[in-house]
Image: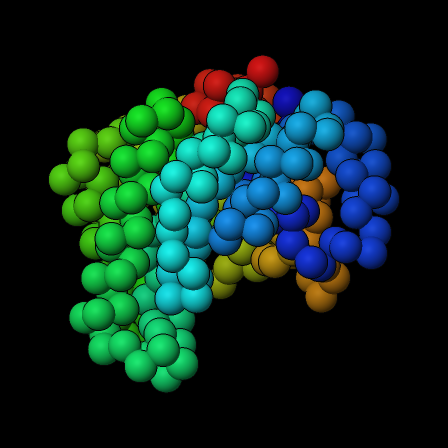
Length: 270
Ligand SMILES: [Zn+2]
C-alpha cells in the first residue's frame, strides 16, 4: 500500500485547496501521516486524522520552533488522549543545526544555549513517546559547518534507550545510517532522492535492509522530479517509490508494498 509516512497537510500551504489535495490522496487509495511542528499544527493534524480514516497524526514541536513556544507535555498528552488511536507517533523532534543562527540572531541565544534547549525538548518528546507507547519521528539537519546533528541525535536516543521510530528525511552519512539501523530505527526517504547529485543517498539506499525503509514527501516541501517547482503533496510519494525502486533494482510495486508494510507495523496503523 502506498503510504506517505511524513506530510504536512496541516500547514497553511493547503488552506485554499485542502479538500482537492485530500481528494487526490483518496484517489491513490493511500494512507498519510500528517506531522505536527508546533502545538497548533499538531492539533490540526489530529483533527484531520479524526475526520479522514486514511489519515493519521504525529504530534510535536519541531526543533526550529523550540524558541518560539514552550513544549507543554500536559497539553500534548491531552491531544493524544483526544485523538486516541489516530495519533501514531511523537515528533517531529530532534536537532536542527542548519537554522541555529535564528536562535542566535532572533532570540539572542549562544550556540550552547540553543542546542541545550533543543536537547531538553527532544528528551521531553521521548518521555511522551515512551509513556504512550508511540513511535518517534526524528528530524535531523546538519549546519553548513556543524555536521554533528545526527551523531548528537544518536547519542540521545541511545542514552534514552529508545529503538522505535524513524529518522525522517534522512540526511546523515552512511556510517551514521548504520548506527541508527543497528539501534532499531527506520530511515525515511523523500523526493530529494530524485534530484540528489551527491551520491550519498544512493549509497545509503543501496545498503539499507528493505525492512528499515520508509518513503515520504515532507509536503509541502521537497517536491520530487518530475514536479520540481510545484508545491509537493502526498500523492507524489509514488515518484519517491519509483526512484528508490530503481536504485534498489526492484519494481516500484515491490517498494510500495514493502514500505507500506513497514509503516503499518512501525506506527501500528489500523
Ligand atoms: Zn516535516
